[in-house]
Amino acid sequence: MKPSRSSRILKILISVATLCSFLLVVGAQSKVPAPSAVQSKQSQKDTAPPAQPPAQESGYVGAEACKVCHEDIYNSYEKTPHWQTTYDTRGGPSKQGCEACHGPGKEHSETADKTKIFTFKNTTADEISKRCLTCHASGKDQMQFGRAVHFKNNVSCLDCHSPHHAKVSESMLVKATPELCYTCHAQQKPQFAMPFHHRVNEGLVQCNDCHNPHGTVQENQLRTSAAQDAVCFKCHADKRGPFVYEHEVVKVEGCQSCHTPHGSPNMHMLRVSNVNLLCLSCHTTSSFSNAPGAPSFHNQATQYQACTICHSQIHGSNFDHVFFK
Image 1 (cartoon, one colour):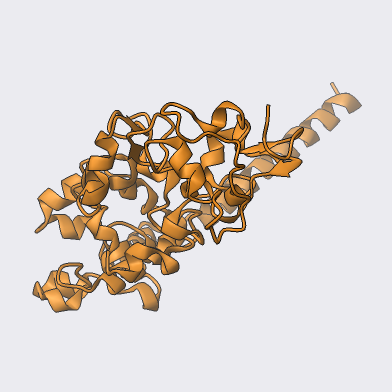
Image 2 (cartoon, helix red, strand yellow):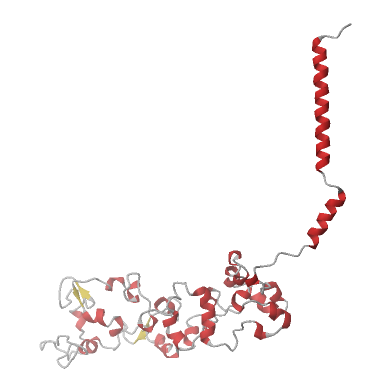
């Protein structure tokens, strides 16, 4: 019986499919490398030298190398804020770990020679501060450090801060404030023991709320308010003004012309115990301050009389030029 036309077409299609499958298998086998070639390439990969850091950073070995000899310092440093900030992978080895402050440690780790690395011990205050400012110069509190009283008197960063053994985690201080400040500023300590004082010893106010230890453009390293006014106005905003009638001494000499900010025997923390004596230091006929003298009808003999009984708006007034209420 003669096969039908459809049967012949089916056989042809099967033959073509078989041929295509054979060609695909042969092509795949030709692309697979021999086992010896694979082993050769793997051996070359294993013996290839590790990637080296850039030439300018080739002297860095990493903090783990420092831990071999300085394990106690390493473990302490690991708990500080510096540990988190100095492991910025974007900065490269020179910005990471111990070497971010001490410089490249390869030669030091190989020879144990202290001269091969930057050490802060027996280093001048100026050199220490410059080393710290390589990272901290752009901080808002450190921008004026070059004009700071601390800097000019050879007080280094490490006199107040300890990167390895900080007693206070915030700012890595060697001692909690205000005791840290009293280490040098002993004359201020008894002022805070006065009957009326800013409550620094009680922990409600900090020294650096009013002062910036890293320097300001103001006298006594005083801070300023957001409006660049005296720092006192941050808390005593009702005394700031502006007023129609200003008390000139406030603008010219500031709050300290009448007040002692640390402590006083006066309840308003005035420079003297009696408010009349303070007023008469300017408002007297023998004064060179240009302030008007007290009128003759003012009786200054009354023991408990105070100028501010009548002149109650002594910081400034919007209604009266002699500061009546």
